[in-house]
Image (cartoon, rainbow, N blue to C red; front, side):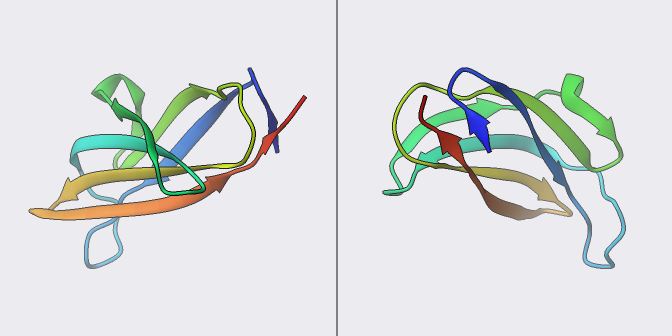
Length: 92
């Protein structure tokens, strides 16, 4: 759980079809509210690459009510890979 105004690290690991860590291009994070409304799109640069296929990005929780959903996506071996997770936002 994160409080409004806190900075959290959004993390993702990309793998290829064999399940091994893979290099990825066009890495983005999209932030949605629980009504599936797109709130923000973030282009993730190589500065946030921790290791092969692993990215970690600092995100400050905006003020507002309700949880958020973040979606990491990127291209691996010519195919778009994505994963979503909920970001619990505590109202203060």
